[in-house]
Picture 1 (cartoon, helix red, strand yellow):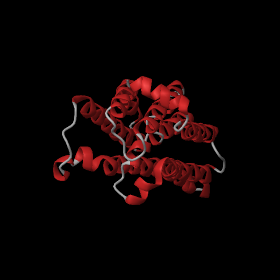
Picture 2 (cartoon, one colour):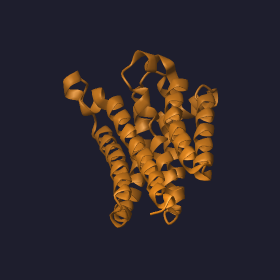
Picture 3 (tube, one colour):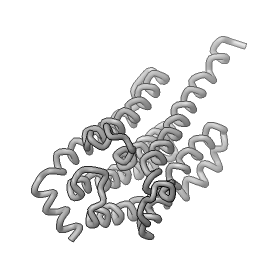
Length: 239
């Protein structure tokens, strides 16, 4: 057995580990952020939730669990089942965008926010839906090219962690506001980019351009949130 054949599995194992850890971290962040108000609300005396919020919670939970399952299916070589579940994933993604948009607007109308003013914060969930839609659409378009597809799906999933991060029950997070919410999300994504680049010896274009797209959307939303134009539009949207 040659040295090359012995060394070959290692990059594959590292690749599986990157995606598995990323998917697991995403699940933990979502659970931590929404534990008090959703998953463990009974233990914290949180107010009752509307049917819309429950639906939003269900579809988002299903997405991150599906993301983890899909990663593990590929890692275990069960690609055919991964592809079959991908059909459900596409429908679930479309549902997330629709339900997430309505939930965000309704929440802002009712004044629900983790800290920032509701109308200003509305740029976060609505922007997340736009970014998610673009990355998911590209990911599905490139589903026959695994190296591109998996990176776009990773970015799409991590790009919608902002709302969960904003609700992590730590004073430093709550006081940090939008810059910290975005910063913590960017750390999650950048860590994946660094490990992927180190493993492959180069920055994959899908990750590079995708991360730049996420950063650009964050910068735009941070600027937009406090402008009179946005606040007037958000007031009309929630009126």
